[in-house]
Image 1: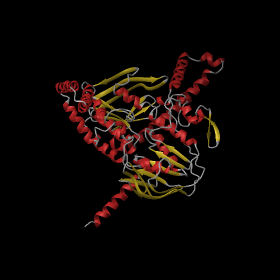
Image 2: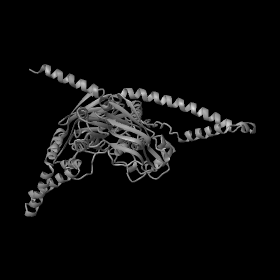
Image 3: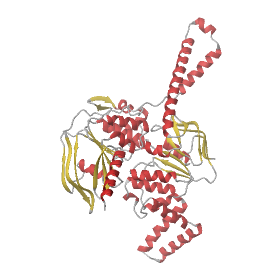
Image 4: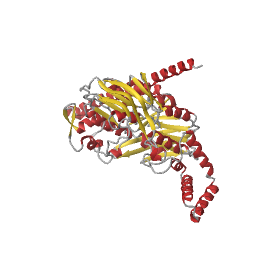
Length: 542
């Protein structure tokens, strides 16, 4: 049975059609991965399915009594209130009642006046009449499952923990259909693996957007590709999709070539001399007009991002050298007596749970924090390019081109002047899109812009903090290829297991309590080596 369907869906922003007379149906117990290029409209489609955006034309039908819940793309960074209050908002009116109850409970504790006590009593009575206390228990159970403290302020959480809170909010209404927009963003590897298990046990259907190929391989029972306004279904797993998609593009390219050849022949015929005009038939003329219209309406396959790094400058042989480096804050040890030597050309992944100290170590290396103790020596001739996962370098009110060129028409690329619009086209920003405010971009487009900014500068040390978040898979693979040929030094923070495996030669694992262990290879290499160490220790235990 179809839980929700789209029939003849049409939606456009300006002259940019996101849905172009397309159909879709979600069946029971499916886990559908929605893929497509950045800016194709995946997040917008999720909002359509949730009923938050109305299509220009076509019909969205949700089966009676089916509950749909959506996890948004970005974590709730600036929202006030506690985690419990935020999660309760997923229950709509009941959530508001529970939120009001907890607010009054605190107020009575501070000021047990008669008016406050009476207001609390009225809210309690309302909750009892509506049977809302059972939802209070559900909130507690969801928070417990996700190891969230309901009394913590949402703004005090890291991006990963905020992501967990958003997931709890989506789950608390006990949905039949779960819409997840980049659910692994900002989550550490342990939590991603927990999420995979949790969602496989979910008794309902799931539509999710993800760039994490390991997550897609583990989760998806069907792939749906949003390509130039059309939703194309590929039953089966991700590997099967890759093969079938490549074949579909090959066939499309061949058919387009045959079509263009036929159109060119007909254009030659219509332009022939007077003798030919006398003999031409009106049916053939009408067919030519139809061919012209069809060619005009064709939406070409979007090109590939053209990623280039200016890594011609060389740093000194030693990039960073530390002896017993430590950092404490408010009595808590974040880095504990860590000694290391980073040499030119090293490619190191920093791996560990959210809040373990990865970003702190980067800030120490970039001289944004001062060590509590120990020695840290920076190498010579360092030129740093830093990718910040929160995109704080971008001004959301300014246009794409102004964020890149700050009002100028030209930018320096590889020591040569180049028009900013031309450079942005390398990152798939058409001239019209380049004049769009950053706040109107998709998450993946914002990341492409951030890459465009940092790649302008000559660099020999790349520091990338979650660069893969929101990127479409094709761009992610091009970034992997670029980093594979990079001649400088790479420090990478990423929870994308395949990206780490394909990119680095060493992994630093944050074990907790400030302890950092070094391993050779990527994520899975490090896990195997850790297990061998643990097995060896057990063998020597009495």
